[in-house]
Length: 205
Image (cartoon, rainbow, N blue to C red; front, side, top):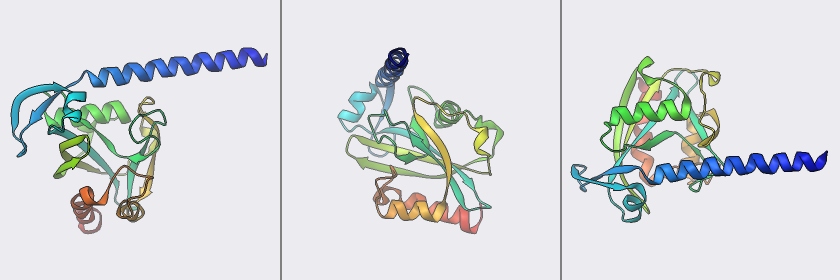
């Protein structure tokens, strides 16, 4: 009986590994639009791996979901099998692929990762930041939804995430300032984002 359980467990893990490998492969084949250093499109499209490997600028999107009443923000824990930043806390984010607009990419990421349709919410722009970290030179376009959305509303993409949770905003900010390994953010890049979030959460939308 124990032998059968062990075999079933191994088969299940193998299926999960195959699904994860297929997901990684699909993402590596994505074509990203290459940008000039000023953020303007070059007209070139390259595979994701080439873009990251050659430090080429591209567009990314990010979505903050804010529970303003309780001064909390929604975070998502990355799947432990992810190659980049496993188990770390992040927000809904991703690449702008092919000829997608920024709005289309944001809608896609929210649907895929969280199972929500952002057309049902009042989505606002926060800021665009230029990032030049190793293997990721990008223009990251940040948006937010200021609404308390119950956790049970979300249907997470299990290949990408293990859970979603609300965290006290000030606690998150302190973790980022400390460059904690619990989160994907670093203060050097994200200080302008948090300055804008301060205004939304503490002063008004």
